[in-house]
Structure formats: C-alpha cells, structure tokens
Length: 73
Image (tube, rainbow, N blue to C red):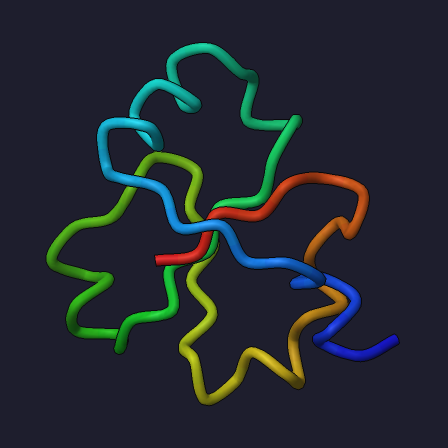
C-alpha cells in the first residue's frame, strides 16, 4: 500500500466546512491528520487529530483507515 491509496483525489475545503464535519460526524467516520511540525502540533490541534509530520507521512500512511475520508492540515 502506498500513500497514494489514501489520497486519491484532493478536495480543498474551508475551515468552516471542517468544523461542520467534526460537528456532524463521529470521529470514527473520518481521519484527521495534522501534518505540521511537532512544536506547532503542541501549540494546539483539532480534537482527535493524529500527528503525522509531512516528512513522515509516506512511512506512516498505514496508520490511516483508507475507507474513511481524510482531512489533512
């Protein structure tokens, strides 16, 4: 499995749309990954976000459920 299996298409959505998704869906229904650096993640992140710095994403993609929509920020 490669990183491409998780990101077949890219749809850009606004922060308000992400907020709505979080309000309407259970955390088990989607992946939220924070690809920022550790110090940025420590300063604050979305509830339930998995911290996978962008440099580690290809090696850690198997941690994500490919059947769920993925929000990356």
